[in-house]
Amino acid sequence: MHALTHDRSADRVVQVALVATLALVVTEFVAGALAHSLALISDGWHNFTDVPTLLLSWGALHFARRAPDRRKTFGYHRAGVLAAFVNGLLLVGVAAFICYEGYERILRPERVASGAMLGVGLLALVINGGITLGLARRRRDLNLRAVFIHNLGDALSNVGIIAGGWLIRETGQTFIDPVLAFLISGMIVWSAVGILIESTNILLESAPKGISVERVANAMLDVPGVREVHDVHIWSLGSESHALACHICIFDMPTSESERISHRVQALLASEFGITHTTIQFEHTHPPGDFHRYMPAPASSKGEAGE
Image (cartoon, rainbow, N blue to C red):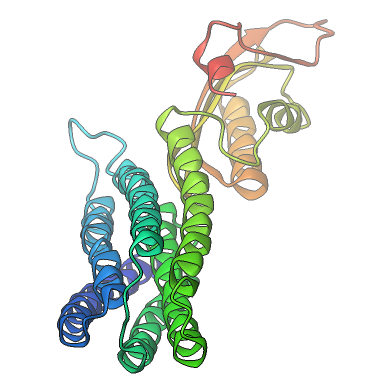
């Protein structure tokens, strides 16, 4: 119930952000046209790129709540990861667009209405800053983190527009605007690369960030009754959902005893590593087995390729 409430809350934040962003885009286009301000029109296009981002994220939140079916047996956890990957690509595109506009502004400086830049820039900062704060507590979700980064970049660009408008009005130097644009685009690319790397690792079923296969296997070896661990595969279903499959050797014993070992291993994985979806295959050995070890997967297997 808590998770469902969390999803619904995130849903509302994204919906409000979508409506507010569309209203802001219209405002910047109209104000930019009336004030002959290329900076405001460019920022309007910058904010307009958030619309597909928000639509993708809203759709991902919707699909992530859908239950598994006969074909999607793991459910739709990857929907948010796919959205994050696409959003990361969009962030790179936005940064490239800002750099291009900055380059054009250096070649062909234009006089702008600094008062309009200040007023609309402040309004945009309030809207984008509010959206960013609304998403700040949900950054653990990779999909929502991409939206958070998008709007944080927008808020920073709004600060640049406000500062640029004030400096241009005070000094008359129009080169200030493109310099700020280059700095903002660099920050956006830096954030986008992190999102692309993390989402790509999940899509390639690499071991989750911060989880060592060897450390997990050695922790399972500490569970009483576990003699050997091998064929360990750990991957992510989504940004916060991890899975594990492995083989565990135990002594030949009644099923009721092996079931207790299974429960202990599952509890350890959930509490220590956040791994909640497990598939464990038991194998039996006979005393006096003296091995107590972790056998890494062969180099050609899925587990080794994902590390």
